[in-house]
Image (cartoon, rainbow, N blue to C red; front, side, top):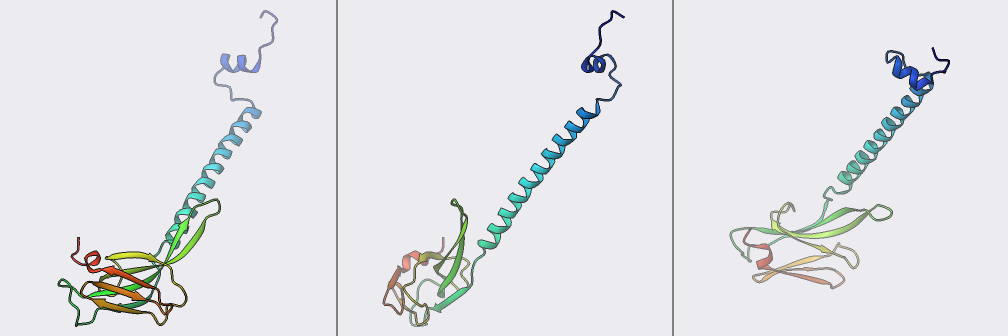
Length: 158
């Protein structure tokens, strides 16, 4: 021996089978635990966002509908106009759910496929009416606001 004192890292290099010092093991465990907790938190935040979006983006209820009379014919289909409540998740500085309405015109009373347009109501929806004509359909609110959709927009399929 030459009289020099070996440091901890020199001893570990000289004797690789020796376990690391307790302080080194504790530091490594704290880092691993910190990474695991951070990963778990990220997964929780992502899952919460996915579930919140799924809940917010479900189609809302049909709040009003009217179907074409037998006196008006388009292509080989029977059409209905439905007003649906919608909820959209907006991701600005503070996420919020935007409530609005869509007017759907399609085959059958359920708005699953067809022509859709966002619509802002001026007052109550009760008392609204729909006027069907060969050239299109007009949705009339009690306030007098009218929305005309030409027949070419909702007939003919794809």
